[in-house]
Image 1: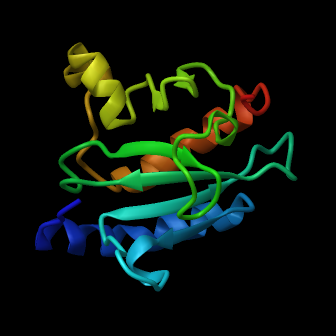
Image 2: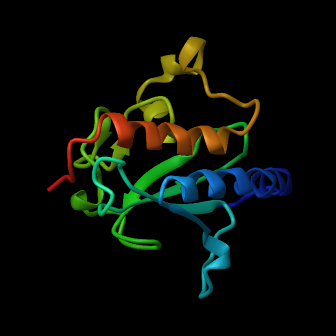
Length: 153
């Protein structure tokens, strides 16, 4: 993904509260371009998350931005940080999270908004105020804590 300077600066400004939130919930945040190796992308973040009911489980959400905070991110689950994105068992089983389609059909992701363009308005519209990155992390964590049904197979 190519990230414009404004988006990069906005993300860098908003990433610390996201990292703090994830740490408070037993997870972590990694920006792809700080992990070393070739091909690091400043538009991509890796969120390590766990459901409160199953603290030994770890999920790795790849969150990729095209324009921040103006557009919703692409969200995929991987086998690990920089892991494979096409493995159904990397996904949690939760309402709207579709491991066989590798997408989230909820108004938090690029994939969900592509399926449901009507979400662009009203209560499901993308929030551009405040810290949308933190909102995404909080929303996924809420789903993990309140709708988690196990790991996809």
